[in-house]
Image 1 (cartoon, helix red, strand yellow):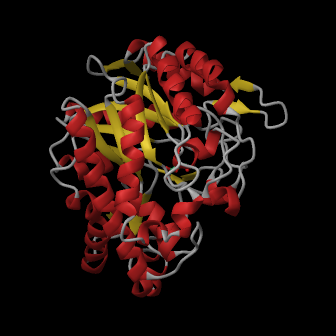
Image 2 (tube, rainbow, N blue to C red):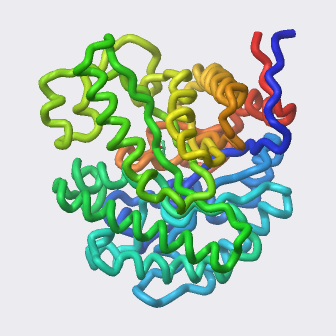
Length: 399
Ligand code: FCB
């Protein structure tokens, strides 16, 4: 028997999904026009079955997002049936004693909103507020944990700097404007939710990368400082005082080395900051696996002196060869962060099931369950049982 690493009492164990990636049947979003996810995993109709599996895997929390384009398919017209759907989803979780973490905006936007200019529209924050108000009226009495925005920097980088996601822009001034409006939108939603529920806990999910200098050269350290400031801290410092916790999505570890590309950092942000070394282990989609980086990401945000939830962490691994070790090693470092005094209260694996991975489509397989996209059958992967054991015991065993 190896060393038992106990997690704090009441630690949350769960996993994350997002509406556009799993629900299916979303027709009025900007993504439906750009890359249609079709029926996806049909989670929209199979959530009860999926939550039974979640329960079977001993999870006590679930992070999911509400699809704005379902609730408000046309400007100012709210769909009561869709609102009721999410009420049923929340009740289905509570019935199973699974704590809901609700994300209000996870990348996909109503088409009408995007047509008006999306996050560049000077009124964007008002539209967002009105939508949040509706969601709050329906779910406010049942939900205590709210995430206003998922990964604002990832969204802005892909949508306004790299032209990879709708609205396919490459314009640094627009990127800054979108960020400013997202900051306003978060603050407005934060105040709105707290006005109706002082006990609510509200934050964002922030993609926090670990940047470290490749060889301890001054120029590399300067780049690390710049990358940390712009990618990791910019948004969070601007919403200081407007968050009750920090949600950390950890995927990326970057050894930063100055190279010619660094001079064009903002053309392809943040990748151009560095020239990566090729060694190490990589996921199916080439993301470097570096478990220690989760410690560095947690440390990075502990400066805000707020509780921390790991709201996403996972890997694309179709054959399920690396996932068990991935979970084990990452949780080792999460535990180490807790031992060192950092206030981490929960961990959500990305993702409950294989799903639509944005511009990469259905090929990457991040799921604890495998989805057969022909039959929509769910099959629990072996690593999911390993994760379930940790959740059940609230402890990790290191051999
Ligand atoms: C994160 C996103 C999530 C998913 C994972 C793999 O950046 O929040 O939707 O795509 O990456």
